[in-house]
Amino acid sequence: MCGYNRKYAIRLLNQRPKTRKKRRTGPKPVYASAELLTALKRIWFASDQMCSKKLKAAIPLWLPFYDTLYKALTPETQGKLLTVSAATIDRLLKPVRLVHGRKGLSGTKPGTLLKNQIPIRTHFWDISQPGFMEADTVAHCGNSLAGDFVWSLTMTDIDTTWTENRATWSKGAEGVLAQIKDIEVHLPFPLQGFDCDNGSEFLNYHLLRYFTDHPSVTSFTRSRPYKKNDNAHVEQKNWSHVRQLFGYDRFEDPSLVGMMNGLYATEWSLYQNHFCPSMKLLEKKRINSKYYKKYGLPRTPYDRVLASDHIATEAKERLEAVHKSLNPFILKRRIEKKLRVIFKGVKVTSNVRQRI
Picture 1 (tube, rainbow, N blue to C red):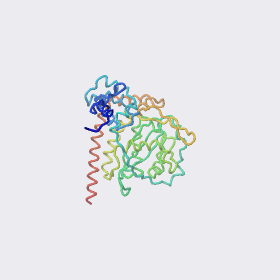
Picture 2 (cartoon, rainbow, N blue to C red; picture 1 turned 90 degrees about the horizontal axis):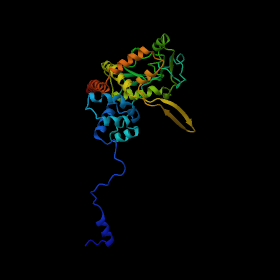
Picture 3 (cartoon, one colour; picture 1 turned 90 degrees about the vertical axis):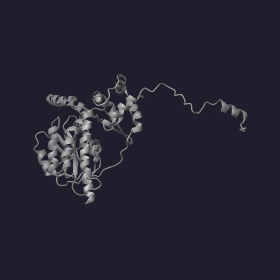
């Protein structure tokens, strides 16, 4: 009836139904429970989607506060979250990874007046005590650098990776200096060195006079022109601490400066420095035409400050008291609440400008 060969008909009749699923070989999946995946995704989104190696170090910091906002996890799930490897985290989160590809504009205008008075820093990797900080600015200009708008100042410590951010209007010399002073008050260690790029917001008489008369700052240096990697520490923080928070919109309302500083100085600083681990480069060497880098284990800036022998015991005790009063999930909710208010102001300003 079908015209099949006898052997071919036998093979067809002996085949298993196609609807039957193939049996999976090997051991049963260990991390396939819905409760574990849900908790992992919530911690990952709350920690701003950090990489798997950092997330593995952050899970022990975030897990004790999980049941304050969500349903308590079973002991089995908690144990699996604490033992899961970075590679397994990558595999579990692969379906929900997000890709960011947009880039911003550079607003650095060279300041040529004081290049002879401010030396170039040449010792880039031999910082072994806190207090030596790199500084840079980020433009919230949207698609155009024309006119006045908000700038963000970023200062990061080379030894502990402790980072502080402040907003200023139009990056004038006096405004930048005022925010540097405010950051200095909030640091858990004294400021000992200040390194910046060659922008006019840093190479001016206001900062030169301030650091020349400063009781603890021993060096005020600048990077080499057109060598962005000289300030690699702060350049990386410009992305993780500013762009990931505020994006690339244009902030041209002066009233946004106060709201941004309220977020920067309280919730954002505590969130990043106490609960977001980072990795430090320990060794970099070149073999033939390739560079090989070795990184240390992910640690929070708070942990590095406590482990430092150059910070006073009283400062560490004050920092520990602050840390015990924090909840990362509550900090994240407060950050999102303030961000909604800020972006509402950005949208209103943008609509008014379009009408004009």
